Length: 394
Image (cartoon, rainbow, N blue to C red; front, side, top):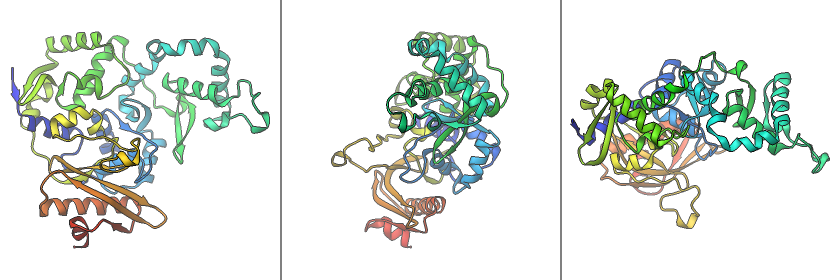
């Protein structure tokens, strides 16, 4: 059994996450598809302290691109579509054959819906019928008018929202567009590119291969904690992995200095063993796919990360919405930024470094902050007194 250096595993992971040379590749239809397909998904989140999570994740790779261009690629050209991978995500349309199976099997695999569906079949039919007749609708279109008080019947927002969620997750409707991050729904046949779902029996293998593709090399725990949707029974995952090992699609190996069984796609082994060190500096969204499995980031990079937006202010260690700093293939600290949109000012409220800084780090960090400021429309950057402020002034 091969033993592979942990540094090579980390370097190959960065390559698969398109972070081996960050902010050097222009965003295009092709580069966007390659990244999201390789990573398995692009997470969405509503927090907007600096910018939306998916915008930031793409900036980390592509630099200051046009958000209007991205939105056109997603919601007009349908290069990506919204579904669920780790959490709510954009997934590559080229992967819809796999995700389409998850949609087709959603009702069967998520039995918690059965009671609700038996009690509310009319709501489901009417919500789908309204969308068919009226075109794209937000959940607000199903809100009960205030004049109706509590007697809104089926036209009550909560059951209608449940219906929208079920119809979306089961592939009967899709996300047509977003305005101020609010979703509009339309029939799937009007918003999703045509696809044929893979066979049910093939899905566990597809999911494991997708996960290994994103991770490069994976510990056994990584296989269930990276792409967490849909939940695959541990016994089925183990049996599928066993078959993939037997037929040679996957190889088991050791990682020097790290415990447990590790796996990689056989086709990736040559590149994994000779992965080149990453270069360059960027900042990561708290919802970046590199950090989806926090324990993996700690094992590979020695970086213990927790988002503190849900932590009471007095108990925060680093800040409300800290962005990890990726420098030369290492996670070496974090900054706590805020985008003051009306003032066109990017404020760095704190900078916490976990490595000894040198001129190359300060240069890389200031370049990344200037690129981020350009991306979010800020014309000035403020930082506390200290070396970062001096570097930005230089």
